[in-house]
Image 1: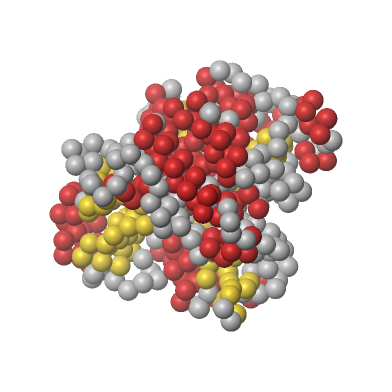
Image 2: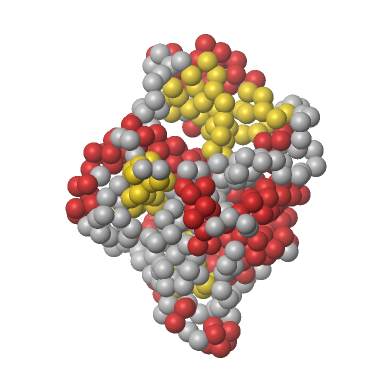
Amino acid sequence: MNAQDVVQQARNANLRLVRFLYCDNGGIIRGKATHASKLATRISEGIGQTLAMQAFTGVESLAAVAGMGPIGEFRLIPDPQTFVILPYVPNTGSMMCDMILLDGQPWEACPRTFLKRMVARLAEQGMRAEAAVEHEFYLARKNGDKYVPADDSLCYSSRGLDDQAEVMDAILAALEAEGVSIELFHTELGPAQQELSIHYADALRAADNVCLVRETARGVARAFDLLATFAPKPFLDQAGSGAHIHLSLWGSETSEHPGKNLFYDANERGGLSQRGKHFIGGVLRHIRGLVAITCGSPNSYRRLLPHFWSSAYGAYGFDNREGAIRIPSIFWGHEAESLNLELKCADHSGNPYLSIGAFIAAGLDGIKNSIDPGEPQEIDPGNYSDEEREQRGIRRLPTSLDEALDELEHDQVLMEALGPLLASSYLAVKRNESAFFKEKTAEEETRQHFYKY
């Protein structure tokens, strides 16, 4: 779809507004909207936004970042390929945007541009990435002055499917209308907790889809007087919610060669190739800094606990759901196509463009340097003694956002991949958010994160 197609579709649908959206360093989806009558020019000219917005935090404060104050602006330039008509609000469409400077160049602080750079790195080596995310979220209803789970159903229970059938059918119908391909849906461990798996796409589109799913689920739920929360730990006494990233690398497609899954080798255990092992090695080497990006809120670290199936250790294994990386079982008859790696230590407080891009950057370092990930773990790493984990080189993931940020700041590979401006603004935003919650109770922290994602 090109800009002309977007303008024509908006006209045919009698749209009044088109939202120009982006996901910021705090993991919050923000944007502005143009009137449809101005869409033809706004697509190329963009909408102005202050440079300070990439220093804006999830607690609505401004972090101290050089050059991100009251002076200067960038343009929100939409990607026509992301245009959708929103079924849950009247006469409105949306597009995801890149942040472009006034000289027409991509801004180095733009998360979507960062992912594009990582995709370009892959292309330079004859590779491309496909990704998909498992979306876990709660449906909640107002009870007095607080929210509670919308039902008390059990994990995977059919009753839970019945309880939320109407709202989930509306969410799925809206996503289908927006062109999102849905794989699976089921209820999760917590009461009224849902899990929605989306079909894989190229890395950039996969990140766009993460934002679209969040926006759509929240928008549809509102029409049912419910709140859909994608917060990592919205209820302290219930299971947390993740955004597990599934990723595979493929050889570049040509007219003669359709490309193959570079993580697959039929002669290896579980179908995992040597290149796939090296990719895992890179991710595990950088995992303690990586989680500062994929688990981007103080609330995230209430979820990353041993024995909670959320991953708490830098380990991997075949269908090991307690490791940071799981190699899922491949599907009969689709072995080569289905082999992928699942990064479990990720949630919706992490900007999806940064999360997927950093995941790629860490894995590429493993391929470049042939990093050995060690042996796959056959048991829950939390069941080893401290001495046994030390012998196996298994480290606990950071237990706070500050600890993770310290690791990121000292990770040269990830910092180089982000670039100076994006790295400094991201660290400043997250340090500011962490400091804000230091004097808050666990209940206050949870309440404030509840509404953001």
